[in-house]
Length: 528
Figure 1: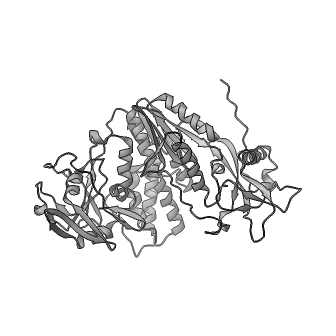
Figure 2: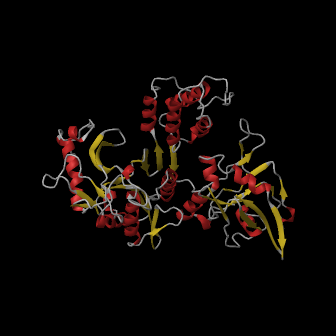
Figure 3: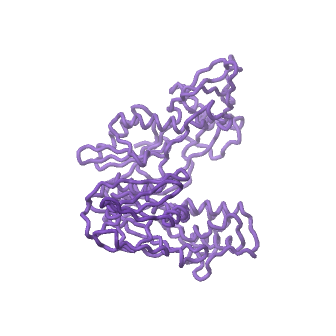
């Protein structure tokens, strides 16, 4: 087999004038404009009176593999979208994007089901999105039409940089997949499934990067054929490098790590030659506000924290240390910067660590926490192991913030309030009825527990306290429930919901269909 590799330039030009002096970058710009012509992206017109064109510019970058080797020069013509006016040049702009946690769940499930995960790249994906608004752009720098130098292009398709471009691309892709038998999930709208008998094809979309896997090898080829019917795709291969995650697949399982990224941040912060430590944070010296400490460069401190936050995708061992340092970004002191450097020293000695999903393990989730505001240090935030009796199946999507000591009886009359605690009803072992992939994604997408533990430890504290400060016990016509107000809205939790979510020993396994009551606040739904 012969593989053709196009010569690539390692130096990125600062502007189009310099780029047009290098044959490699000339080829990259011509390839981009050829795609415009093939997809009928625009047409040249005289600028209508009262309309204003949006400027364009060339963006150049090198595409590298997981080893850092340049494999392709990419030239992208982008619109300077900051000139757009809302309501005039665009309306809706939101487009769903897969989260890194969803990709991890995907890989864990693939390992459990023992199938390979592939990836593909939509070539000039945004150019397929249809623009509904009337948008005019200037001719691309360096490629002006000599016969019509003062005319502009009217867009029929989206260009990179337009506010509405991601939404236009997502709608085009989603419509194409659903018209070919795929089902878009209700909660995670970047997840598409196709079931044929007992076989399953799973597709996860992150803008123009797509990962997919199936229990049947024929469905791989079917999906690739479906995509090629409408889009031009490239880089169809087993998933190896995706969103900065390095992925190694084998029959024994799947390993995800960020070895290259760790080395990059050690180099970035001049810690490549530092002495390694065995722990990411001091054991006997907790971080405090340190009001009398010497202030340090806030921008530099935040840059280090930002680098760590992305690394936690595959390194949960540094999560606690990073979250401890995150709290002091507004006024970092030398003690906080020293703690951050300790994390870098820890990474120096453990560059190659990652997450291993063995294929012979069970696909189960386990309960993990009970938040105790009384015993925590610093700002009275502490975590204790969760009560093993507080269990809910993965299929249930209601999370109850519950400061109660539950008695396993047939009535709620003996439920006792204990305001000192804020116990979360949390997930443990998946049952036979909840093994399907979409149900697991559905739970984790809705679960307040996942969000609270991983990234936003305090975001729900006020809502939880408000609920339990105003809670009332109701008993009308043999119906029993507890009721409270959060954000000016009434929350009602009936007995059957509590029994199902907490899996009371005296209740049937799944006796009812749960009715969800949600509170909307800060653009989020709080399932209580």
